[in-house]
Image 1 (cartoon, rainbow, N blue to C red):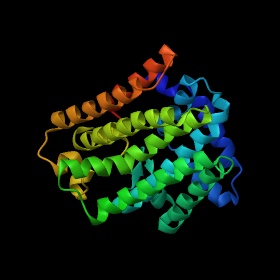
Image 2: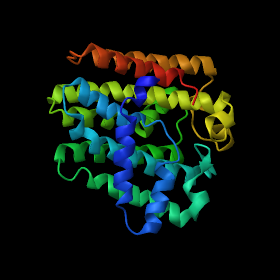
Image 3: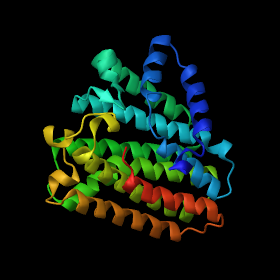
Length: 280
């Protein structure tokens, strides 16, 4: 999706500046390994696109966007430890490269750098910390109380993936000084996009070529992780239909927002469908 990289250069430059300031050099190297091993930068792009569609200055949103990417990266480090995944985006995962202690330190370092970007804005800090709490609760649920119904899975996906997507959009609206109703509408949109994203991840784990995906597939089944395909009797095609239904709900929420910029509105529509159709 071409528009998903609309602000990629700006995001990469700010990420590099934040990481370059990290001390000591050993920690900086670990953070660089995690953050610059690849990634689509979907979440920070959502932040900047939402700010843009609301007429805000994206320079006011760039630190919020970078912060959410750092939180996401920190969560992936822990995911890989839990899953014993040796690869992430075709490169060594953090624990493979630096051992478990180094990976945990890297995850903590990423979170610290992220939160430092929100200290001047209490509303933004609240959005991020609420998302982090939801993410932690989702991870705990996944490990300790694995969902065994489609409804329970959807709640897990909302917490595990939807929450950070929601925060990404809310942060863009906050940076644009949007009213609470608009912040909520964009949050609802992005949360549904996140759930669709997670369902598609589950499908790709079942059907994708591991070399193209950049990580092993069939991982959910091997590790008894609760994907939609594993929890239910749905086929991968039916699971994709569930993802598309979430994309449609996302667009319903977007319709509730008052958006004047038709071009950016179409970008956000395109994103909702992209997450359902992506191959990586």
